[in-house]
Image 1 (cartoon, rainbow, N blue to C red):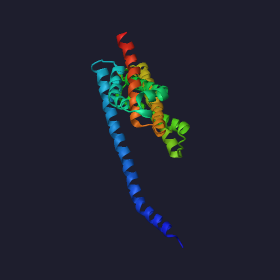
Image 2 (image 1 turned 90 degrees about the horizontal axis):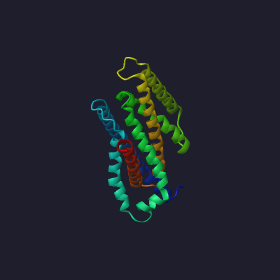
Image 3 (image 1 turned 180 degrees about the vertical axis):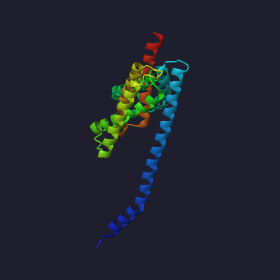
Image 4 (image 1 turned 30 degrees about the vertical axis):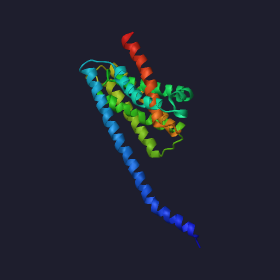
Length: 240
């Protein structure tokens, strides 16, 4: 015969399970919605960059991304600087500064390469080739996060890579395009390089946050080091 405590625990479990299921469903849908909003914003950013490059002939990829890091720095680095103790800005720089420096460098150069690609290839090519970040993230997650995928995931990655290869070949082979094939190939390679760095940055971000580092700390350090790296790059390229 079951004890009263066992009955009570099983009853409470049956009561809380639907709530936990609803909360889990809400979190999944929230992630999906936020992901779509982020995708729309990225598409708008890409369209604006393409307009600047092809209509107004303003080729300043470093300047475009610099403002992003400055805004992150103003908000989250300032927030981090107001903290005290183990979570203070100076403490984080001393203990984890080099790690965040590497992640910021990958993120800055990923943005630069993708934005630079708009100068040489079409908006459609950049938007599609940027999806190369998916197989990169899956491969790195398998290696470093110990995530295991099913056969359907592997087949999806294979189709993605096949599509990337077909798109690059079509760009080079299209002699009727307004952009020469050699320049399109350069733009495609820049975009693939940027997508690879995006994948590295995204996996490093997930690994960092899952290691009990706060989102404020991550964004604050990326904003700080990203502003420095991007600012130096901007200074060297356009003012020296």
